[in-house]
Length: 75
Image 1 (cartoon, rainbow, N blue to C red):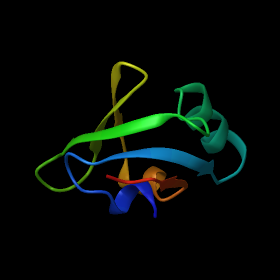
Image 2 (tube, rainbow, N blue to C red; image 1 turned 90 degrees about the vertical axis):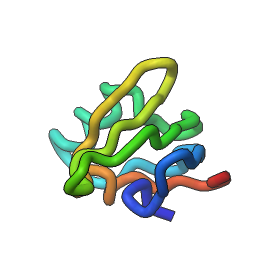
Image 3 (cartoon, rainbow, N blue to C red; image 1 turned 180 degrees about the vertical axis):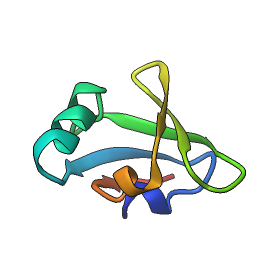
């Protein structure tokens, strides 16, 4: 499942971070690495961006960036 497809209140584990170049590096530097647990706090009123909680901090991510992240064990 892609991160962009998760609903508010769901938790999952990052399996893969796709993309290439600067965008992928930036995502990885923000702590979105394989094996990390991620929680979808909420979506903005127009569904972009997504507010996430990862490794104890809040992070906002654009939906087009969330299409590059694959998650598993969604609950």
